[in-house]
Length: 70
Image (tube, rainbow, N blue to C red; front, side, top):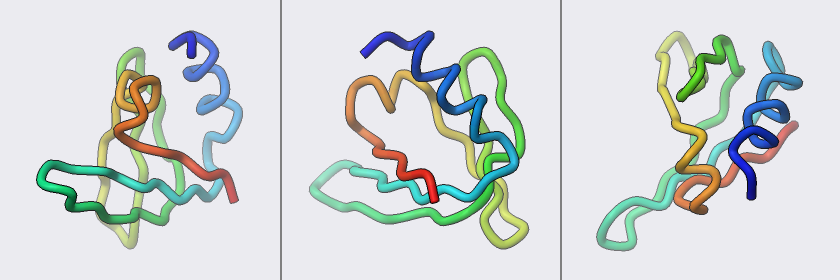
């Protein structure tokens, strides 16, 4: 998937709730539920209970993280 399309899609959901599934190393995975608070050229920030976590658009493109818009 094209990164520019991914950036535009994330930007459309600024200040909205999302759920992100992160597939880490050694088959460990976790989920983040929060609000997209900032979008930058190469990353976006999700605020989960007063904790900010950053994710890259390239991780979305490669499937390392999966985003679900709520």
